[in-house]
Amino acid sequence: MKYLFSLIIAVGLNQLVLAQTLSTDYLKKHTDHFTIDNGAIQGSGKKVLQKMVNSSQFINYGETHGSEQVSIITKALMPLLKEAGFRHFAIEVGPHSAQKLSELSSPASATVKNLYAFNSSYTVSEGGETAVPIPFFDGISDAQFLEAARQNGMDLWGIDQEFYFSPFFLMDEMVKTTKNTSDFQKVNQLKQLAQQVMFKHFMAEAQDRKKAAYPLIKEEKAVQEFFNAFDESNSKAQSIIKDMKISWEIYIHWRNDSHVDRISYMRNNFMKHYTKALKGEKKPKVFTKIGSLHASKLFSNGAFDIGHLTEELAQKNGTNSVSINTWVAFSNTDKGVVNNFDKYKRSFRRLAVLTQFAKKDSWTVINLKDIRKDILQGKVSLPTNGDYHKLRKLIFSYDYQLITPVDSDTTPNRKQ
Image (cartoon, rainbow, N blue to C red; front, top):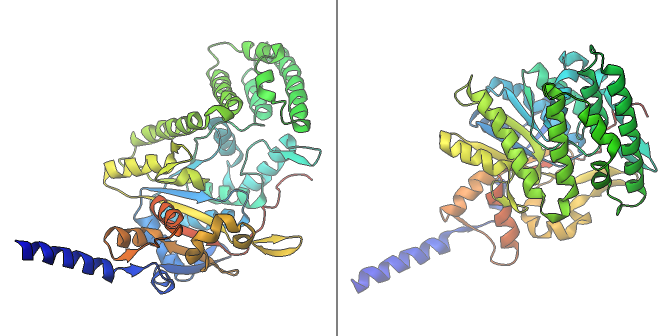
């Protein structure tokens, strides 16, 4: 028995010794590159993306906001998603903002033109700052990926809170519900008074961040009178009022843990859409474009976010949920191309074993899922210094790491 116990220990120690380190040579085997030319994905990385799409029920694309390259790859993925049976596109905007985007992208061919007119009408620029009506759909390339999504049969799920500056267009949507009634003129006048008051508070906040707008806006008599002008039977107006109030409370209490209320609201909205889709599909396939933190499969920023939710759903369904993280390695600036891994060294220095694969002229995709599998099976070991923590968190939070080629901010799709 003593000999057998010693043998078991020896075998276990031998397995530990045989485990590879997370070396450059090892990681090369799990890293591919691709380019996107005229909307088509080319290179060895295409097979990785195709396999990912074809084997998944849920894909959470964790983006870097404002990235031109992210919009380009989103557009390029749409034909692959359609072929694999994806029909639902969840986006990081409010439910009513998604309804507006659905309207603006019908027909799909008019998307860029319609969004140009919409953004031009509702975007406000004051004192060097710009407030857009719907975030992440302000650029030309954003409109183009939305057009591609609609052309490939995607319906839109708005799962987030309504954006800070969305009330101006949402209030117009409310007024439209009374267009053919005797109340139209009165309601429109009340809207104008309410918006004047709101704009005043927004401008005060822009000049002094301590003067938060929404705590004051929600108490304004003009705003309350506008809301009260809509009959309870007006379901669309009442729904917008309800969701705006929820969104305002989240913004008001963001310093006091309202982030988890936001995430719960997002999860609930996702499930409303998913439950509805289940009525016509056994296992609806959903592509979600959302900030990288939201795509994490682990407890992230104090909450169990969308990536965690879809992972649970996939496990229940016997399917796969994929979470993708994105890094922008190089950015075009007025001073030339900047290496963001150097610029933000504190954030990336412990991830250097992965950032080394970035290329200026092509995308990089690293298969974290297979690396994670090797770690769990004892085939590869993580560093034992401080790098361990950041690497393990990344590898266990996401299935794929994407690194963009040289990137730029999106070009605004509105009158300048």
